[in-house]
Image (tube, rainbow, N blue to C red; front, side):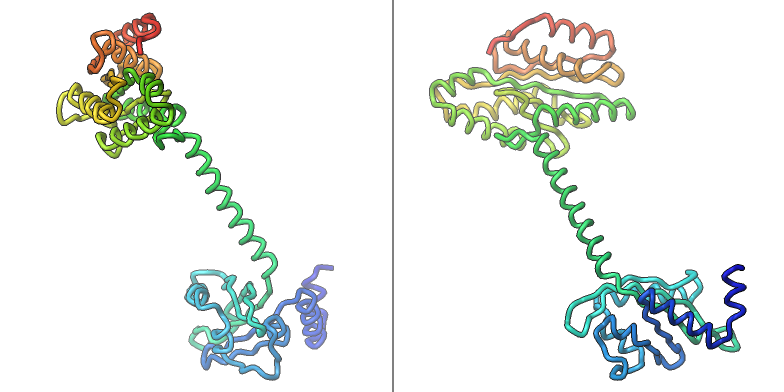
Length: 344
């Protein structure tokens, strides 16, 4: 026998009794709202969930409204209106309600239109009221922990990409940026521009003034380099005294040599504070036309080779290498690999 057949055999009084037992077992409160005068019938279970006495409450909509959290009331009415207007099959909303003892409990409210007038206009709205405080607080706790973990992960990821001394991007972070930039340049048919900056005589700063002074010099230079690039450009410290700069969509306001010379000038401003060290910088810039590069390693080797040329020709120089084809890139990269260890 189906459940429907069984229910059809019950007398109305028996059916009501069975329904009340089911509702009691499910611990569901019941409410019945008359839309014509805003009177609402709340059953004893509804009252008990909020610590209220059934015989002492006003059977009106305001009784419910006054206990809903102010931040949740608008959403409740939005969901109610959506159902009344026929945009949803039923009303459903989880909101906070103030218990008689002052605490907030989470309530799952569900309801449907249960009566219409002769013109088809809704006149009654009936539903259930269920305390979901435990599960909702657990959900919120898990959500808060998830967000905290995401923030910690994001922070750890950022730290893993950051040079702890200068606050610049480190080798790992720079390579990620370079990979993305190479792909962007390929998609948009743009050139890629990469600069290698290596400090001259930095060891003398450490030997003459101490390692603390050396660290301070690197921090000062990092700040000055950041001031001499655009917001979208990426400056990185990738070694003890080595810096890389990725110029985003290079459209320089002057020759690339001029841009490189600004970085050398920034180094000399710092060097003035350590006069006995003879601190300077040699700069190599690789300007690679679209399609000229096979991978990021080629770009790094070409920029490194250009920087080595600056050192070989007298230091405190800027050397620019422009490559237009994959063949040129391969030749320059191979040449840089054969040059061996560069002078400091």
